[in-house]
Image 1 (spheres, rainbow, N blue to C red):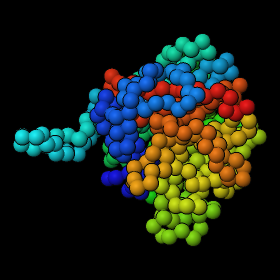
Image 2 (image 1 turned 180 degrees about the vertical axis):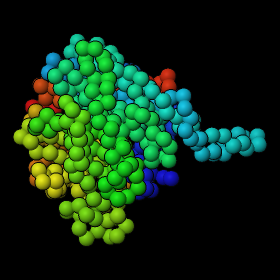
Image 3 (image 1 turned 90 degrees about the horizontal axis):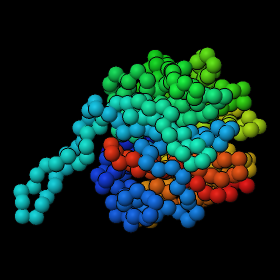
Image 4 (image 1 turned 60 degrees about the vertical axis):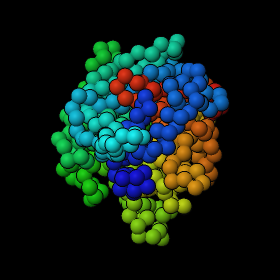
Length: 407
């Protein structure tokens, strides 16, 4: 399948996103593979990666597919890493033909096989710059699925783990599609809510059953709002008890407010809610993947107390993360940018600022697969990049800082 195939949205982009490492393409689209293979290395970056945008400072590297970020009150930055799969082979790649001049063409694998295992982890970047792993051995798929959204409580870190076993027709790993608690004093990790089971048993959106949790955010009452990108749903989880409730079902594109009147093919597109954010005043925002969204379709919605939705802005391009800065503005990360003129391949990613009137303003462009975005108290912006390109032995993920973005 190509990145243009709308069915790929049901995998919450895990198979559309490029995963390349050491010059070997592990997925599609090919744009990212070309960038990683052909760009001139820059000091402080991984081998073969494109130059960082002006003003970027690398504060953490050597990460295995970093996803989301959250600051604790003491200034420690917590980072989820999706990992690189494991020892269990779950799928063989398509076979392509490789020709060598003067030799008989031979069939060779286009990429290594997909695997799963327990290479996901959570890392902590201390205020003094020390990077350490605070939780390891977490469920991971080499296709880019593992620990994702993260929030910080009093002495605890909460994080979600995505999953793709159900969508592949396999028994899921026991820990996938769960919300977890990490107790910082002891390092103990425990599952507090298993949301994948609810999707399997109830299929709230009525389409294919394919749970894949993504970003989480803390609501005003201290409960966690969790996006299920594969299930097209939002859940609210009580971190103290693990009790959860279905908060909203995100309809197909044609059923979203502001998207009325679309052609039938576009109207049937599934929303893939990847991102959630809660403003200090309680306003709740939901971001949709928006993979090649039609013009005028919403990518960012507000979630009202009664579960209804209202459009904010759109369309974005491969939206995967939302956060509210200390300046009160909403920020969104775009995993890829729109294709360049004459090309069908997505471009480089970015972070944009979303204003209340729906205006979208680029903040930082030219980022390699950005996902999580977080701000420190001074308004400096931190972004997880190179988020779907690491392979075993090649931890190319980074977190970069940009000064004074939200002041």
